[in-house]
Amino acid sequence: MMPTAFDYIVVGLGATGSASLYQLARRRAKVLGIDMFHPPHENGSSHGESRITRVSLGEGGHYVPLVRRSHEIWRELEAATGENLLFQCGGLIFGSTRSTNAAHGIEDFLQSTIDVARTHAVGHEILDAAELGRRFPQFKFDTDDLGYFEPEAGFLKPEGCLRAQLSEAQRMGATISTGTGESVPSTLRRVRLELTGVTTKPTASLVCSGTMGLRTGPQLSPYARAYRQVLYWFEQEGNAATFSPDNMPVYIRLA
Ligand SMILES: Cc1cc2nc3c(=O)[nH]c(=O)nc-3n(C[C@H](O)[C@H](O)[C@H](O)COP(=O)(O)OP(=O)(O)OC[C@H]3O[C@@H](n4cnc5c(N)ncnc54)[C@H](O)[C@@H]3O)c2cc1C
Image 1 (cartoon, helix red, strand yellow):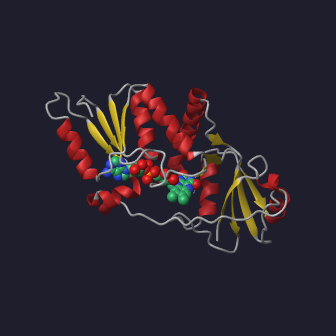
Image 2 (spheres, rainbow, N blue to C red):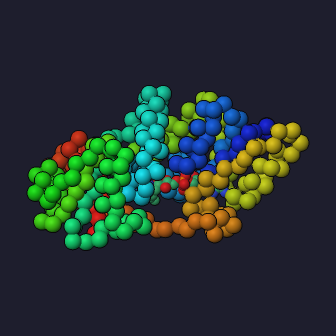
Image 3 (cartoon, protein in one colour):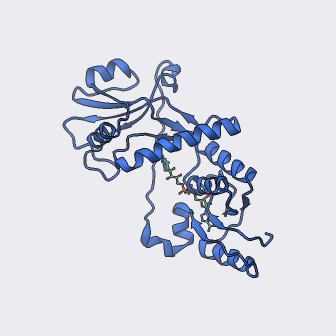
């Protein structure tokens, strides 16, 4: 890598790092992005076919403006790259009125989502079991189920999002170095060494190394914990079109 003066160094180019790189490049910062693999790749958390996006987050109302802005950014990137990234097929969250519906560390995730939607004027419908059954025949509902439906929710294509942000960042002048394959401390040490003799030191290094960074940079472990995410695949019954994004929302079933 040629020694150059960078304002920022982004270590890790998954969902977090590629967004950071793109936003810094948009602001005309001189920015270097580094990844130990070649994103998008299967070794981190940002790969696969889809990631749910919701506007009303039961996790906290402070996220709502961030999600709204992110949807604007995805549409800007779609226009710039011609890739389809955001699919707003609607989102359904449902659970039993008799259970606590805890999720994502929130005691009553369904009620919290409804409260955030009301406070932040997020368009939504509250549906009882009969209405859920009529609108969404893909599911088997219990008689005491209650649902929150949000038309603006949907899913993103995570690998396309990475590709779009990295290519746009590069087009705006960002330098990208991938396949570096070393620990976070070694990466930062090497980059600092390579920059020795350069008058401008980076203003900041952004460590966006995800759960892998916890393994490769153990000094990060007091600040974050990695959780295993188990994937399930369900075989669909009946007409496949019923399960296409045109007819079916993304969903979270609370237990
Ligand atoms: C199965 C699954 C389903 C999910 N579903 C959803 C969902 O529906 N909606 C949602 O919002 N979120 C979802 N998430 C969470 C979301 O995908 C993650 O929060 C997000 O992808 C994390 O991105 P990241 O950039 O922090 O980490 P990563 O994607 O892991 O990226 C970290 C990058 O850092 C690089 N790296 C690590 N160490 C170094 C080093 N020393 N030097 C250089 N590079 C390094 C890695 O190679 C990697 O590219 C899901 C996650 C999983 C796993």
